[in-house]
Image (cartoon, rainbow, N blue to C red; front, side, top):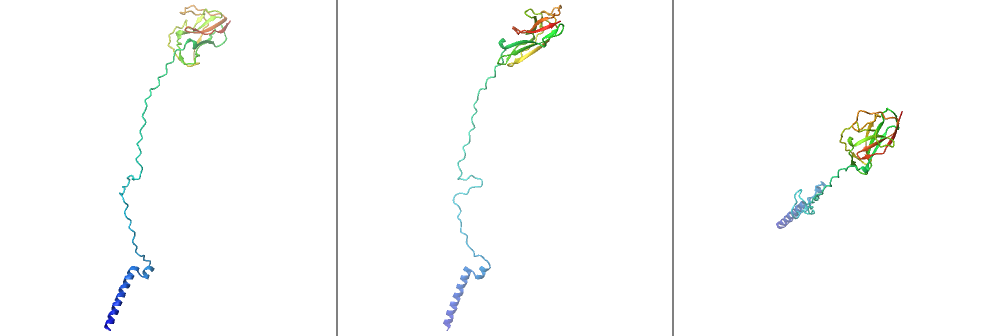
Length: 217
């Protein structure tokens, strides 16, 4: 009898120990009902191999650094020579003409004459048209003997060398008093009578075409 009681106590003690171990591992039905999760061990992630790159450092997988560009070399060029200065207008491209403002005037009136000097060439050129080289002359029709010249009583020296573009002209006006004149402007001057006359323009050795006009009585 005593031995049987000891065996029963040993079996009971062993069962109690097994029940406590099972509850500790699996928990109870009340624990799951209360929503208490089972603890789970997170898998360990081994650190990546190799060195960690510093923030802002270039990645080892990026491409090679670009080759620095080389600025193109400047080629020195010789500037073009300046254009040659305009040449003097030759006589072949210088047209001298004389105009009269009306075809006829009464004796004693003051006819208005205009001298035109025109560059009729294809290039710009200069021409000396100073007063000592230009003149307007009145002659009887059919004669070459001058009755009057604009340079007889107005002998002034100027320096006029304009640049004339192709087709450009310079012009000078003269009021004729209707009286004769001579070189040096002598004091004796007479009124030109009624008749047919020509006015002619001159520039140095150039003589223009005659332009007719009439003085009436």
